[in-house]
Length: 151
Image (cartoon, rainbow, N blue to C red):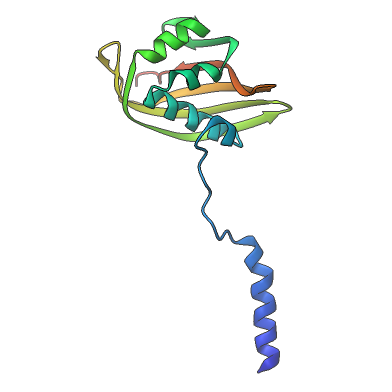
């Protein structure tokens, strides 16, 4: 009996370290983010909350974005984002690649709200952001947004 109890306890001890006891804690700020997905989730949370100082700090001075409207520099991107009124959004299908001090993050986003007073499309859009670790922390240096082709 003692022998079986010892075997069961040893097997349990061998398996238990592979189990997570606590849930993963989502990043609440850019400094809390530990990966590309976390950086994106914090970024869009700040856009929805209209925390423009935080959003501005997260964009590199040479930031560039590409949308269906064309290429936007940092200032134009900030103005574009300030026109958004997000009621809700969903991010998914994340793929993150780390190369030295750079994350390349691709994902889909579905947003509900308005931009320039017009309703946002309700279909998912494909996004890509390039984040680079600099002295001040992680900053986005490039972003692209592509709507899916109509079927």
